Length: 597
Image (tube, rainbow, N blue to C red; front, side, top):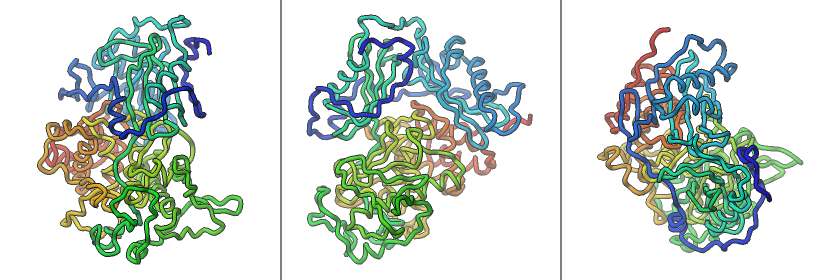
């Protein structure tokens, strides 16, 4: 392939085929060690300082503006969904009036590229990215929230500053490598020989040493190993500038019913009849088929699947919200297709996991979209969320892939798709991604993604009547009660905030799962105070305002500001503030009431 001209480089090139280039074969190494050894150029979360109107970086550039208090005379009239252009215009005008606050000049703002507009009932989030000479700037999201009165109420920003405009774009220079050459370099670096998903585009990238590069940006899912790699290759020198595995996963497995068998019966793992019952219960060998017991069989609950597919005289697990799909190894065709509409299996059947995960994914997204009225679905494809009930080559793990927008569940220990908290946790990663249109982060200094998954999972279980654990029981605060807190892994908790302070006890754990426990715990305090539906709605609405660099404090500020946007009462806002500032130590600003207009 010859060098691509600039007009083509600036277009995202999505490739839905498997590349097979000569590269090193993947090694049989521990996944975490491999990720760590290949990770390069990833900037750690930087400390932020509280300003009068929000949070600022050390260089004085705003990352969160919680009280913009900006409105222009041309107010929005009519229904919000009919005024997309007006919302975009207002957001742009705000940025023009506050360019210096975000480290930008007027020319940069004029050339911002509109990425996505998300409209909710009470407010709209307008997302931009920077570009230089029509080439997008990597990691430069700006999300401006505008309410239906035309007032800017919240801004999250990850602007890239510096003399970007002075950078000379390589056109057809002989020193510029092609997309195919860059892809081969990326595959060799990751020690893989093929992918099952590849997306590429040409970007401007400012590295952690503040050097500016032109680069090929790839999102890659390896064909034979687990991973969801975000990698940048310098287009002039062919050097790997940045590599990060963005797979959303956790080390656990689970058996799931309407609630897990232990929560439905107040039993502990290992009680008679309440264990995974493999031949070797301490083995993570997924080839062992779990065995039924009368207790585990009786713990199942008959539920209604309100939407399945019927085609060619067969019923299958396909709805507007969930789609069972066999896309990862072991490729065991575990998605049932049958001539009647009774999906009645026990846990020894390979189909049980598929039905269990389908019910919870479908049920939860109905709750979010139809009860909470928060519209959220995958942007990577149309239709319901695609999930593989038996993926990851059977490992004791599960993940959400940001590139493909799909979920997969492993089988080591207790099958992950049998534990509803595992299912909702992984779905939570997807919801976070879809709400922000790909502007998420989940590093060890933040843990926002892991905490979001834990919050949604813990809240979901607390609302199910069959859950028999009470707030006075230690198990009430356990996360992954069936999959974890057993010989396979210790699980997590949802009261981790007690006795800890942010940031000193949270941002230096070295583990995004541990850090995320603070985020989930603090939000559950607020949920207990204002009720599940009210907190879930404002939590998701606030999360939709954030960008990649938003930390726990920034996300908390976005949520409490969303409470004002959604016209929550002063008592509700104060209750959220109690959770964030008293029970926890985020020290967010409590939003003031709108000025009458």
